[in-house]
Amino acid sequence: MIEMVIEQRRRDLGGGFEVGRVLPIAKRRMVGPFVFFDHMGPLDLAPGVDRSLDVRPHPHIGLSTVTYLFAGEVMHRDSLGYEQAIRPQEVNWMTAGRGITHSERLERARLQGDHLHGVQAWVALPTEHEETAPSFSNYSGSDLPQWNEAGVVGQLIAGSAYGLTASATTHSPLFYAHLNMARGATAEIPGGHRERALYIATGAVELDGKRYEAGKMLVLASIASRVLALDQSSVMVLGGEAVGERYTYWNFVSSSKDRLAQAASDWKAGRMKLPDADNVEFIPLPDGPMPTFR
Image 1: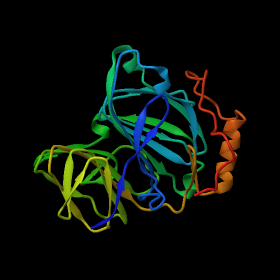
Image 2: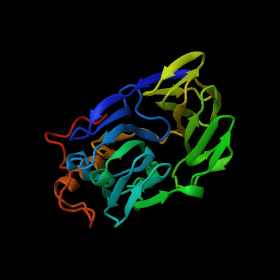
Image 3: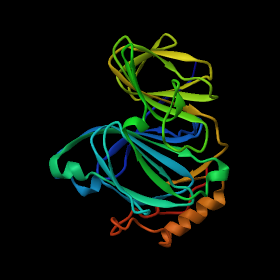
Image 4: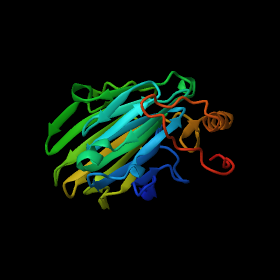
């Protein structure tokens, strides 16, 4: 059963780099611990692409960012000293905890051009882990279990599903997987969690007898479901247990409004360390007073 259909909304991150923003929306702030979901591209980038499309250094608290690419390459640098390119079917998992800064640069595109396509999700940390020490890991190969059955090539990004467990360290029960589905193939959407969703990155699928096109997230009831691919389709399935109410401001997520205000003050005052390998520029705090927290 489908509880809600969420349409992506186009957002310009600066310099013409558009994403499809899916979560959050006013009527649905989270799915399990997933508090943010952006669909990047698909975007063809010519050699010499302008640096304005890069995501300059910026801060996070209270969450883990989960970056997964279908195509292209992005260079990650952070305040812990990590410098890691992410490539297709890999995962960059960065836990902000009490605070981290990072940048995401299109360096390969500048040299030779690129075709960029992927998803970045944010996973809210449970209250007892919101101030954990920041960390970063890149996962590939056997860290991300794969299967190939009846027209479905699957890759588990995080958590446990389909009888498999991925290597990423998670702080609450969840699952997150990529299903590459041939036309006519069907796949189970994992159950066992109160909150689940399916996002159609490419193609079209049928669920509960109705057709849904790319760019839509289907928020599901907790009962088991199966999805049918009407075309060659790339689908993300995700869900998990709720972690409680969360407030968001800019790149910060917290169960405490005061903590968000402190993070904003720290960034504005320059008290959050920039990446050593990318410390010449940064994204400033948005102008104007802090909004009423949602």
